[in-house]
Length: 168
Image (cartoon, rainbow, N blue to C red; front, side, top):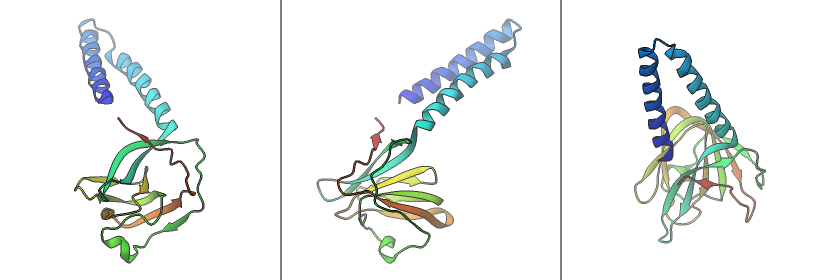
């Protein structure tokens, strides 16, 4: 919400400054470039501190839900091992809980996940899935872009912090 308001305000500011510059016979492009450069630098700085993430979790009724957020980039994660996979196991083709708490890093492909209350979200390269829905009905997914889903599974160590920060 704050980002939307900021973007709207920024757009109005750019429009206003461009109109003012045109009426004053100034160089609107130079002023817009200066403002865009400042915005771009701030966005780049924020993006280097975090990676987008979606966390699957169990609900009290045994269902599965998700929340959108981020994880910090320079924090060491307490994990046990990792492996790659590009095939789909039989259990993954139907509703299922995660077999363990784990990070799932998509390398190739885009997927639409669906949780038990019917809500959906998309995972694609650049977004980390944190699968913590280890009991109950779990989730389903469908490949929506690409022919295969290439991914890394990175299990969290027992009782490890997932470092997820929910978007408010």
